[in-house]
Image (cartoon, rainbow, N blue to C red; front, side, top):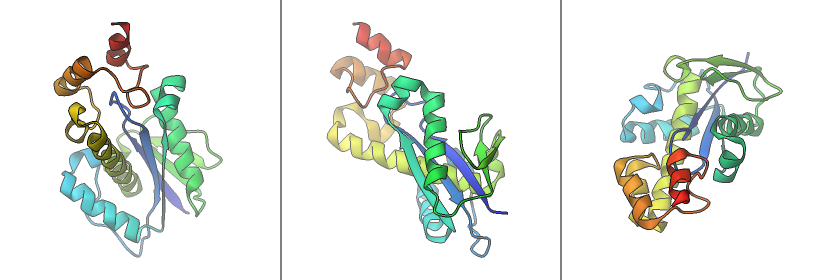
Length: 188
């Protein structure tokens, strides 16, 4: 049976796309050290990212845009990104194991596993690919908008980020206008 693990990164931030990954690992090339991406250092995540894209049997990364997040809500956008990641796999899995308690629409049988990113190697791998990809996007965004500090807070609603929004305003197409702190800023 071919299993893929699926996870997303970026549900909580005030800015940027939500990114999902789907991974089918190769049992003949085990990857040591896989875990929930949030429990790993940035250095370890970068190392494992390279291991995963080199040794996985198959992987895919997809996203849902800020416009989609604002249009259909963050949960639905996360599920959409996951569905896109599963669909992009070049090997069709028999089953997709999804981190969390909701499953995306898919023609592949899906199983939701709460805390799966710390329990199932395939989900851990997907967690790492999604997190590293999204972090890299925010680091690039920081080069374009250095006054917001995206490289540091990765779009989360930190005190520094909220102060930057207050001082410089929101960036349309980057900040999620459906999220309360951004919506509130638009009222002023």
